[in-house]
Image (cartoon, rainbow, N blue to C red; front, top):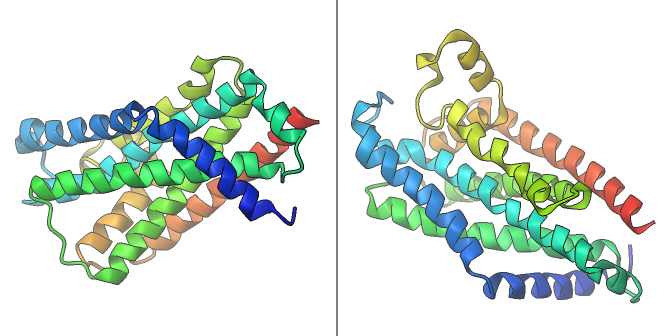
Length: 253
């Protein structure tokens, strides 16, 4: 590892964050869409949905947070693809810096921008009636799970940004990720779904993550679900990271 890796990464993160602050529509866009979904499901469709709870906004919130993150990471792929097309990577690589710091700058920017979106959505949920009696440790556990989920999806975004042939290709990969929570326990219990759909919903990563976050918010036992959620998150992160770094080495070879 380059001796200046951390300082180089800090500089690259600062550069990428400045791009975000100059184009705040990216954060606004990825925040408004999940909030719109939350308003729609709570105030328009909530009365017709049998979720087994009187506080549907609390039931809904974990899935909305995952949708926000899945939407937000598409901009990581977009910014990375634009950097590649502009030739800025070649300029960076001609400098005495840690080469991986260029990627990590985009990854850390994704963490910061998605954290802002998550905080805003939670504040809106509180205004809509969301309440949690969870203490500091459960909230920290929720934060940790969301950070792991963000990192895993961000490295998928890095892989997409490095591999895409067009802007549409760079961001198009995120659409299935955005809609994956709709086929999970995020909006309704999986028991209400038809057989094949239920089987898929109960065995995909979003359901275990949503159920774990929901249990933490409600101070309910998380059981083995938290280990399944963590296994999904760590597994996806390791695979996406390995593939992204391999693609990066091919690009700069």
